[in-house]
Image (tube, rainbow, N blue to C red):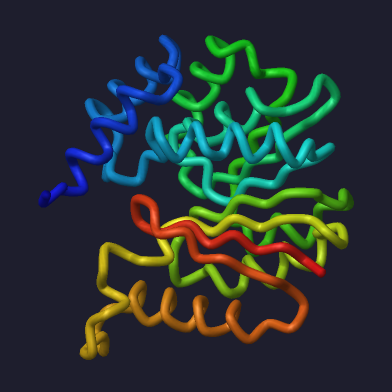
Length: 213
């Protein structure tokens, strides 16, 4: 039987716990109003992030790349009562939609949104984190990863999205594609980083699970 990725995703969404009204509305508004809605985390990966958060029980989460706030809400929903998220978004035009849906999801008290460049914001953070989610400019992945590692508690987790990069990592000619070169470099770096153990999960566009030893 030849199962396409779309069929598998549709079936997975149908069988999994429902997305929820607020996240559904956020997804629709993102597709209507935001640039590059393909960047949205979506139902299945959002549900995975919620479940991972619920299992890990982090006291403090750092998200690098908020976009319209879907993933931040999912992770916030998985937090314990005292858990918090700091999420950094470089595009100020997305702030209003983020804050709107943080409020509608009743997660305002768990999410601290910072508008700015993560490369300059992360070094100013005094907190130590138990979990980090990276989904920002691919050219910045390696730099933000190393900055995040300095702020990550031993035994903590980093999750990095888009590490399959729409299959472009398999292309032999990537001279003119900074994103592809950056993701290839990032994946090789993680593979050889003696500070961590890692697993590349081949769902959607690839999710790298990394644990600091």
